Length: 149
Image (tube, rainbow, N blue to C red; front, top):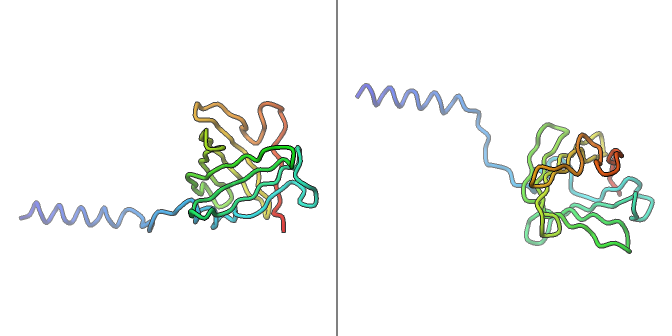
């Protein structure tokens, strides 16, 4: 009987030692809370074109979240189905996507006021497209995107 009581006491202490996290958040709720949904571009007053991509992050009819990147009428949009999202800090977000229905990617995005910027884009094999905010193929920093109204 004492062993049972001791086990119950230990279990109770452990249960209260672990912080209550509530229900796990869906990617949609994480992205909504971060303020990621919406229309974003380096320059909202200019049309989508190379060097001024427009990204629209929205909730699909299925309830999932999609990030659609457009480089303009002459280009096919890149469609990223967002598979998972986690808040890393109040101004940093981790996202796992399926690019054009073919390849998973991992992103990290930072927010500063009403701007966002991709600082990491990694393929499943661990190779980077973007690392530390630099596009490795060009050596250029990723642009800040502003929320378009």
